[in-house]
Length: 116
Length: 109
Image 1 (cartoon, each protein chain N blue to C red):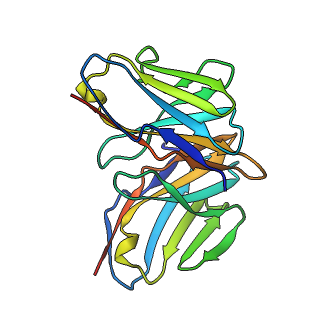
Image 2 (image 1 turned 30 degrees about the horizontal axis):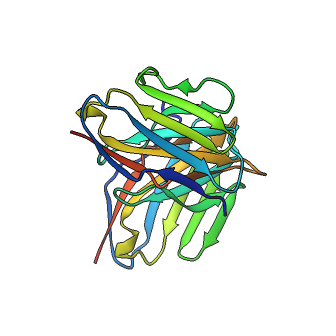
C-alpha cells in the first residue's frame, strides 16, 4: 500500500532555534499534504494544507510565519517551526491523500518535538 | 456544529465484550468514511473504510454506514486489551478529510 515517511521521528531543540520536519510520499504523488499537531491526550488538530506549487492554506489561529510550509515537489512537503518555544512542544503528524477511486489518507509516523 | 462528531469517551468494556463506537457527520454529500486507530504517541492507522450503506465486516471489526441518518459506526467483537486506543472517525467530502475528536476505548482484562 501507499507509504508516507516522516523525518525526524524525534527532535529536541533549544528555545529560539528552528526545526524542519520532512514528509515524503514514497510511492505516489501527492499534490496535497496535511499537517496536524497533537497535544497529549487530545485529538489531531489540522494546522495547514500544503499544496504543491502554491501557498499553503492555514487553519484559523495557526501562525503562518511561525510554521513555514514548503511543498517543494509532488512527493515532499516540509514544516519548519521557526523560533521554537516550549509551548510548541508537540507531536506533529503529516498525511497525504491518495484519492484514487474513493480516497484514502496515509499518515507519516509523526515527529515528537521537544523544545527546551 | 462540528463537521464530524464522536463521543470522546472514555468507553470502557470488559475483555471479550462488543465495543460500539459511533460517529455522525454534517456534510450530506460525503462519500468516503474511515475508522483509524491511534495508540498513544503513535500515528493513526487505518483499520476500516466504508463507502456504501450497510455493514462491512473485516475480522473482529464491523463498520456500519447509514447515509440517510448521517452516521457511521464501528463494532469491535471479542474486544481485547490490545484494542485499547483512541478511535478516530474520518469523513471525506470535496477532496478534504475531516476527523472527529476521537473516542478513547479501554478494554479491561
